[in-house]
Amino acid sequence: MTILDRPASEDAAAGERRAPRDRALRREIGVANVFSHGFLLLWGALTVLPLLWMLLSSFKSDAEILSDPWGLPGALRFENWARAWTEAHIGRYFLNSAIVVAGSLTLTMLMGATAAYVFARYEFRGRQFFYYLFVGGMMFPAFLALVPLFFVVRNAGLFGTWTGLILVYAAYSLPFTVFFLTAFFRTLPTTVAEAALMDGCGHFRLFFRVMLPMARPGLISVAIFNFLSQWNQFILPQVLMQGDDSKWVLAQGLTALAVSQGYQGDYSGLFAGLTIATLPVLAVYVLFQRQVQSGLTAGQLK
Amino acid sequence: MRHGKYPLIVTFLVPPVLLYVVFVVSPYLQTFQISTTSWLGYSAEADPVGLANFTALLHDGRVWNALKNNAVLLAVVPVLTITLGLFFSTMLSMGGRKGRAGVTGVRGTAVYRMVYFFPQVLSVVIIALLWKEVYHPNSGLLNGALRAVGLPAPTWLGDPRTAFWCVLAVMVWSNVGFYVVLFGAAMSAIPRDIYEAVLLDGASRWTTLRRITIPLLWDTVQVAWIYLAIAALDGFILIQQMTNGGPNFSSDVIGLRMYETAFGSESKFGYASAIGVVLFFLTLSVAVLALRTARRDRIEYS
Image (cartoon, rainbow over all chains, first blue to last red; front, side, top):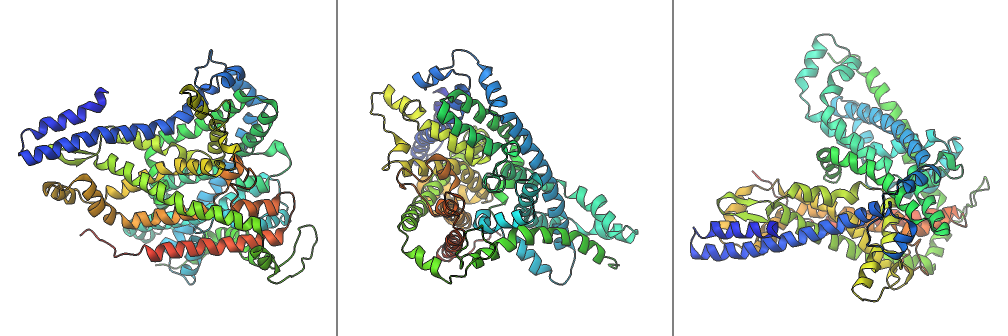
């Protein structure tokens, strides 16, 4: 409560040195400040509470979860986590997701950066056409093309393979990556590139030794953006990775865990699995907060 | 000096274009072709049926039921999300008006922004599974609270009257934080002296928001509206994981209809593609409509 009161009293104190009309305004603002803090805290609680509940429930026994949803766990039962990790194979799915995203992210960044560089720095016939071909893909979600995509992947012999997922993830990440990085390469000074070319630096060396290092901040932003969207991808693996459950990615493993939890009543296992899946992503976010927020919001502001 | 640029353009552009055309452009185009067939997936040749799939769509009660729910989402989700987003971002970036310092944010703005953004970095699957447990009739967080204060405990997702609205609430919950950050970024681009001038003229907080902030943010609000409208039409994973359209199709949406038609119990790929084509044009017209109706003069800060 003291935190809530402080801005109000400060405003009132500042207001006393001013004209009476001004003071009334200050008082109104002071009251509004308490209110605004109240609403802000309320929404903060609404956001955090389900996540905190998930974390706490992951330590509870099933009996505790069923009898008292708001109670605290009697002990820190890490065996729930162990059970989710091994028996529900969350550990394996985690690794699978990591492999797929490592591959697709590398491919996305390589192809996105090279294409964007060409669009930003070179004049050639059809440049506009290809650029808008890529950027136009931002308008439509992947799942509108889901049915034919399923057959394209199957006919290429890539159905149920990580290679297939990696290629598809990368392809659907290209529109935003190309859009973002083209804009970024355009902001880089041209003088450095011209000087390097004058000194006899080849076009390829110029890109890898000069331009790519200069574009690092942009590359990091877009890489984090792509990491999150590829890590959280669900509908593509759901369709393209049916069957062989040893190759599933994390999101599929979680839905499978939820289904089996429904049969077995293993609530604590489900919460443990969800917590294991949530913590690394939240950790990445908290560490790279600024880049994540700017990367994600830049994607919406064209 | 630019001789020798073509080897680079070709090596840099051909692989991304190839990947993109194979996995993104061609599936989109094929959707249109498949939608005019009665293809069931297993036969090599698909019988062309002209527009029969589309006339069948017109008489499909389930499709209309799903579209009706999409219409509700389209009307409610953007309005609620943008209102809450604007409200919180206003509070955060100019909630604390203090004496001579003019207009500043409230205490802990960075912490609020960080926390509000949490749902945005989580996978839709995690959000869906977590909220399914929150709404759980017996062990859920919500009914636990209701029982504690002696209120009746509804079944939420199990009740056709409430299921759809429960999912809608989660949609708003998961989106608000993103728009708080987006609007916050746009607000920080508005020159402070405008607010200081208005403050000196004695304008109330509400007047400032209505007459200054919202008009200056209009471009961003418009972008937010388009994205939320597209999400309201196309997003179905949350619904699939929380209710799978039930109970009794009460929370069904068009995206889920398409998914079920293609990959559910029956693989009517032709019909599913027809739904996809309809959805494609719906998405396109909603975006165009939003751009048209929301168009105003751009404001440049000089």
